[in-house]
Length: 149
Image (cartoon, rainbow, N blue to C red; front, side):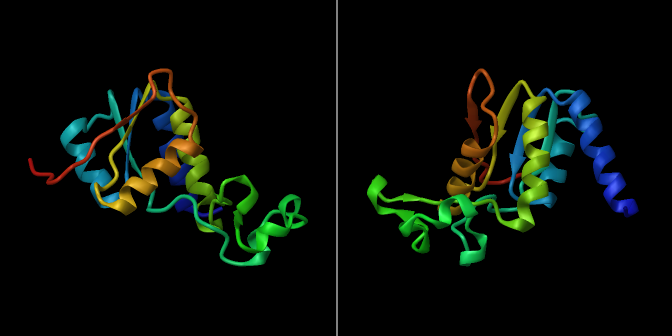
């Protein structure tokens, strides 16, 4: 295993010990900036990046789970018999990130979704609410127009 991989695991393990309020943003640069402003010591807030979309429609037939392939609608990735319900999957590139976010979410008392206010950011927040365990008080949503100190 690489040194970077060990460093990431230590980072997330230490975050689990101390995270009280989890703030999820889209980009790592925004996460670093917001962490410095909110709580540099990471005692009350833990700011992490989701790195964009965490779920998507399947890109190819090989992405569709075997349990779903037998159903005729999976070639469309939308179940027309269930009110056009889409089949969303976590992309392979996001599997580890989603696993880390779930671990952080389980250890957090509050989850604040701070993705961008555009349609894409709203979609990312919605997908996060579908993937992450909901805290007792539900998810909070904030939108930043500008971040300055």
